Length: 328
Ligand SMILES: Cc1ncc(COP(=O)(O)O)c(C=O)c1O
Image (cartoon, helix red, strand yellow):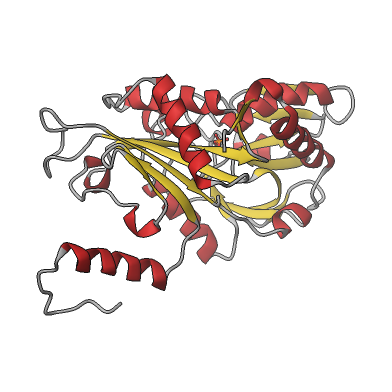
């Protein structure tokens, strides 16, 4: 839609028509949206909006997290809620309601979507009331839940593996890296930079020369000796998928793996790995076969990536204590 140079004042009905037209020009797979500001759920994407002066919109003062819907059940929501509440605390956000109430709203919004597979993303915002920096006195924190199709990646990521580069953008300082806030500028710039170089994604390296993480995923390695090595979580986001995989991976020790370690990983050591993995809720586990134009191992997806992915898939379907039934 070209920008109009002679904008006029719209009626409420005309404004909603324009929001619908925007969605018609660019269709999205957003199925249900809860907003504490609406005190309800909407299923028309045109109505999935926030007041512009919410500080999450114009200052980035908000946090979020994402969980998966697998075959009509929500996977590992408690781990995601743990991280969500940690991020809220680190961001000094006021909780809009209790953890139990948030969980209930998430489950009900999922049910309202009617979808049995997809993603759930939820946010806490500082709330509207000014265009300043700190929240205004009496600002009502917002709580939002979006049920959507989830991020999709090329099938070749699994069959052929990914190619990544060390980003030229600096890694977030630890406090901001461990907080899942709506400030993703370094992560976005890293992914754009990689894509412009014809690659799939980037990797942050910290000032000490240790491996960090990717744009919205963690990375891990399998050494020549067979140890699964994951960077420590003090300077990167503690991925719920990584944390679970580090537990599940113990089942592979003695066959595909020799051990499981969480440690600082110098880049030089990482480059000598037999396998490199990309790990996250959206990608699950995918093999990285090339880093900075150099092959990892033999440059082909390896057995640990495959075995870990299978373990995770199985857990997502059968991990009884980690699945919540959705009352559709
Ligand atoms: C920066 C960053 N690192 C790692 C992850 C992986 O976390 P998870 O496994 O919980 O999806 C994410 C995704 O949330 C992320 O945004």
